[in-house]
Image (cartoon, rainbow, N blue to C red; front, side, top):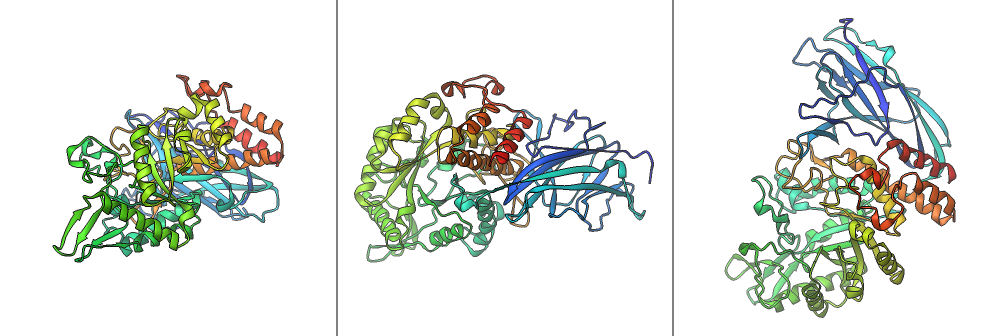
Length: 580
C-alpha cells in the first residue's frame, strides 16, 4: 500500500448537513479534526451522528464486508466498521449531494449503496444511527469506528490513527411509540406520482407493493393521517402544465365509478379501503383526509375549468359509461351529490366516519368556500372538514363544519394573540401549523439548516399546536435523484424521500431531522405535563432569539429569530432528557 495515502476523519452532530460549491468542493478541512463525540439519547430512541471522511487521493469508501473491486484497479478501498464490543447494532450509510437552486450542493438522500468512490480532497458525509431499545439500562455506552484499507489483492490493514470514538449517554426517559406520542403529523401522500415513477399500473398489486414500503416509512416517522384523493387532479397538478417537461404532478382518484345501463351509479371503494387498511397497519389511522370534494384548485387554464355547471366547486368525477363503453365526467350537480352521499354512507356503515375529514388546501375566498361546504353538508351531513389556511378568520367562519384547522406559520406568528385566542375558544378542535413554499426560514428545504426542522416542532409546542403538516412526501419530477429542483420551488420543498431502484424509499437527512424534531415536541410536552415550567422556559430560551412571537418570522436574518447552532439544540436535548 502506498504510504502516501492519507485518510482524514471526524465526527459531528446528526444535524450537520454537508454543503459544497458549484464544483462540489466544500472548503471544509478535516486536518486536525476532532475524533470523538458524546451524544445523548432516551430509551426507545434513535441516537445518531455524522461521520466525515476525506483523503489526499481518490478512494472507495465501504460500509459493509462484501468484496469490492473498482474499475480503477489502483484505487484504495477504505472500509469503516464499528467495534464488535459495542452493544447495539450501528447502521452506517452514505449520503448523496444534490444541486439546489443557486447551483451549490447539499447532502440529503441517505443511500442504500454500501460503496462509493470519493474524489481526492473531497469530503464524504456518512450518517450513523443506533436504535436504543426501551429496556436499555440508563448509562454510558462507548464505541469505536475503525478504518481498514487495502488495494486490490493486498491484505487489509487497520488505520489506527483514524479511529473515531463515540459515547452514547442513555437517559431514563422512554419515548412513547409513534401511535401514542401526542404529535399529529400530517404528510400528504401522492400515490399517483409513485405509480408514475415506478412504471406500475395505478392501484394495481404492483403499485400497492411499492406503496407499502413508503407507508412503512411514513409510519416510522410518525404520520397520523391518511391521504385519499376522491376526484381527478384536485390540485390541478400543482400548476405543472406551466412547468418544464418531465414534471407531471397530477393525482388521480382512488375510487372507481361506473354508470350502469339503467342510469344508476356504482362506486367501487375497494382500492380506497385497501389503502386505508395499509396505512392503519403502520399506525397511520387518526384521520382520513379526503381531497377533491371541496376547495378544488382553479388554475385559470380553460382546459381545467368547471365541468359541473350547477355545482359551486370544480371537482371532476370520472366514470365508465356501460352503455357506450366510454369514460366520461359527471356534468350534473345531482350526480355529484349522489357520489358524495354514497361516500359518506360507506364510511358510516364501515364505522370510520369519525376519522374522516373532507380536506381543502388554502381556499382564499371565504364566500365561495362557504357555499361549497354548505352544498356538501346537504348531501352528506355527517362529513366533517379540515382546512389548511392562512386566515385566522376561518375558525369563526367555518367552525360549525370544520374540526381541524391547519395554519400557515406566518399567520400563526404574525397574528399570535388571535391564533392563541382561537385555540383556547375551541378546545374540541385540532390545530396544526404548516410551512410549504414559504417562509424562507424556518423551513425544510435542502438549503435549510437541519435544526430548523427541530425548531418547527418546538414551535408547535410553544404555540400550543397539536402537530405539524407539510404538503409533500413524494412530489418528484421524472428524475429526482438527478435533479432535486421541481418547478420553481426551492429544492426539497416537494419531497422528503427519494425513489430507489428496489421500490423502497431512500430516506433523507431531513426525514431524520423531522423525526428528531417530533421527539423535541414530545419532551417539551412532557415537561409541560409535569408542571416544570422553569425547565420549559429555559429550554426554549436556548433556541429562541426573538422573544416577541409576532416578530418571529419577520427578520431578514434567520439567526435573529432562532438559533441555528447545532450545539444549542444538543444542549436543549440533553437538558430535557436529564430533567425527565
